[in-house]
Image 1: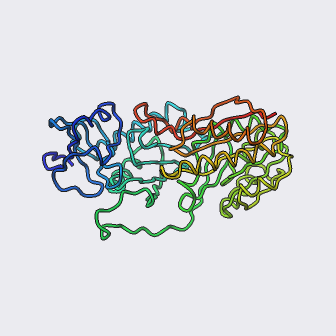
Image 2: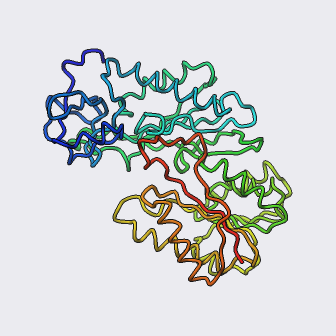
Image 3: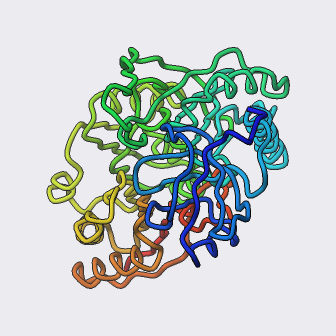
Length: 398
């Protein structure tokens, strides 16, 4: 798009431009005073202050986040802007030592607001890019995204797979505008991380198929696992289990409610450690933790997000307290607990408070020995603190 004169415009209420001037990329519907031109779901819109000053340009949505800003300057060509931002994201991963790294061929290439591309997530699995579009705007420009990715020789990609996140996609203006997508059959790919081999279901699995945000934390857990009997709860496809064996774990038990995840978990362990003493079980982790003996001296709790919207926050806090109390009651004296929350709406302070209450309930003395974060390929924009979503604690338990 090069003709900006016909582009729709949204005008902010007086005094509501301050967040935009601080480069926060979200504009909520309540901040909008006026709309000009034809606004279609996912279209590019200019954002102006009450006095007419251009504040930025972004994708129009129809939920609470009305505009996701791509730029805080004039945008003359949307495709060129996205291509430039993709190249910039790739250069950041080069600086992190990920591009062209034969021992780690799986990582996140684009982390939405952290790479100034709100609504877009791209994970690389060797020669395959898996693209998640969390907004109608990014879904609309998917052809430009694919062309740009395949045009980067540094990435050496042969395939781009798109996954549309319907649960988070902006609501259509009319039901007739919904573009129905048929779920693809499972497509399992192979990749490496720190010299370990993994399989991921990139079309039928959670997120894009694997959780690259835990890469650094997996290394830390592996280092703590030597000689330990490990329980990996909410294990998904068993990445923490593989790292535990890589670190010298005595035994590992992997538990998840998903049979398909457990099937891949077993394969991932066998691929790397064919004869390792590994037990994998399909079970509800809350119930499982009430029944286990106190023989585990390293427990990993990495549950899915308990709070996906504001109304669920209090229930989520009770869930974090409950699951951590169960683990703290059963872990051996002198054991180590690695516990996580990936709920964006739960702050670090809130999560720590929930774990503190769990320790009180369990009657255990607990030391925090490390605060855990998402991997560097999931950068957080300093202007968008909400992007710092993964928080964890490494605890020594008396």
